[in-house]
Image 1 (cartoon, helix red, strand yellow):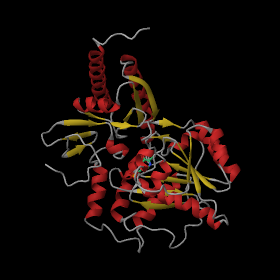
Image 2 (cartoon, helix red, strand yellow):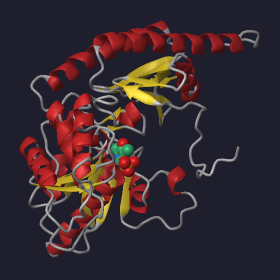
Image 3 (cartoon, protein in one colour):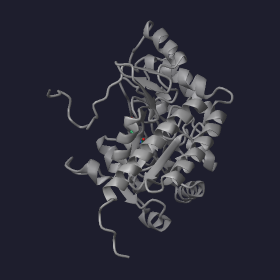
Image 4 (cartoon, protein in one colour):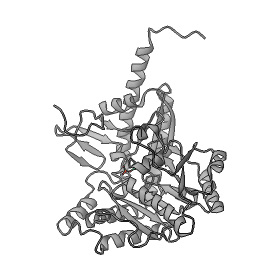
Length: 404
Ligand SMILES: *Cc1c(COP(=O)(O)O)cnc(C)c1O
């Protein structure tokens, strides 16, 4: 059968009919443990009762009114985000890339209204991922996403990850901001050391640049803090959020200090769908759970245990797993064997994991995963690692030994 879908995804032949917490269930009743959570989106798992209730209650009242009128749910959610973070202002979007677009425009506008329209360039870091719009592929700077899509959007400069000499050299009178993920997700679960994040903050302060954090993947409890930058004890000027904030409902947000947002006045930016009543009802419901006393604490405890168990797995299969990366429940296995093969082997064990760059496999389960479910997931990952290890041993057997 020829699919009418644009063939931009190479999907395996698997589909799900329903979800329950950390489980995805096929029509035949097969249960897969979801350690990918829709790429770190289903922060509270599938069909969380509180989210279902919020969605259905709002769904029978009012879905959409446009941003021409006040949206009380959005005012409430923005206030809660402001109360819980560095930010004074919030703009709601439908996706991560749009949250980044808002952040990029805001940084440029800030300098323009400060009398420096020439300061519009943004420095990003190798291995970054910021989305798939024309501006965000330019920001991400990855050739594989830019190839064939015409001239790269102007105004993005990229330096090697962790290279402060290159960074200092790249800053010019035209630089507006630095843009970085506290942990590169798609790039292979690469953490920015907290000391480096503090150093980036200092550089921004010294040179009058804005610090933009992309917390689309790291945010909303994923690392055991509401936002990952809290671990470093510094705050950004602008932050892009999405994925977990909607728990599966498509939504994102751009958060900023009042100063950074000062250029974003009436008419400067907009969205038809962003922040509609349905999205805001779900977003508020997600925050109800994430901000509950003790919720983030249990994410931190579970993630320590998870990381420990994964380290044991690495010791058991050193021919397959070479490194455990990441923080909280954004963890990565750096592999010696192809990551796509590992994803397939895990799926054969009915465990869903997600590939990332640098030959990494991501484990990004719902934050609500229980210890028993973690143990079940680990048993399946263990079986997958064993299968991969044995397949490679078999393939290597019979091949002549390399001369010393
Ligand atoms: C997923 C992701 C994006 C893009 O989000 P979309 O909702 O797919 O547009 C941007 N930045 C980071 C760090 C991401 O993980």
